[in-house]
Image (cartoon, rainbow, N blue to C red):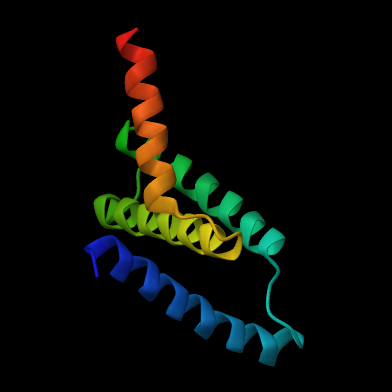
Length: 105
């Protein structure tokens, strides 16, 4: 199993843990649409931290917070890909091939 496949499997396990917590709190787990909305919130948090790196929004532990938020966003992408049965590694490779081809043209 590749490192990426191990990351995806771990993301899936953490998502299953969240689903259990959500079922206890709300009587059901979040839908993929709700996960996507959470992702949008994480992207907003990430944008604020990027501003911090540019000197616009000061905060303590900025580097650590940025790393955490990037990992949160990656987790959301992995979970959404899993929910929609997207082979993220293959899709990434195809997309990079397309971009490289476009940029070399």
